[in-house]
Amino acid sequence: MSRRPDRRFLENVLVWIVLVVCFAMITPWANALRHSLGPRFAIFIVVIGTLAGAASLVSGLVAAFSKYGGRSAAAIPLSIGFGLLLLAASFLPAERGAGMGSYTICGAALFMVVAAVLQGRASERVE
Image (tube, rainbow, N blue to C red; front, side, top):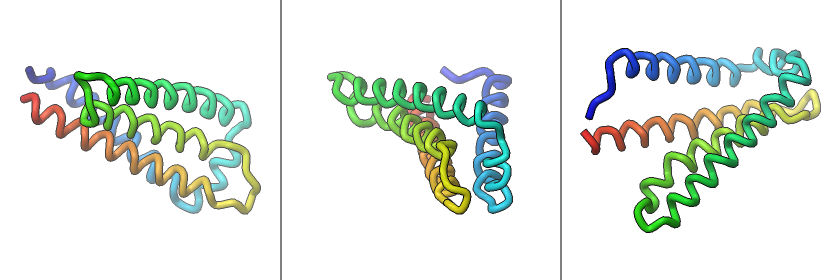
């Protein structure tokens, strides 16, 4: 069962927007931008990212230990969960000279790309 073309287009656009923003935040000029964002925005991202990441990790663990899911069903939620937790960790307060924000955002982007590839492969198997 294939998806509607307009939904597929919207999903592709959203994935590209997320990838472009993640890669733009890795650049050195984005370090000042990340620190200039208000502290309330950073707290919001940390709380929402942690909650969504924990929920995704729990659903991945449930899928891994269920008798119908297995490792293949758990890979996508676990990748998304780790990516969200790394994204939330990149907005935690740090010293001005610390460059860990770029590494955690790069790790988050890597996990999200892995999740997208796994989801694409899973949809190809179904079709």
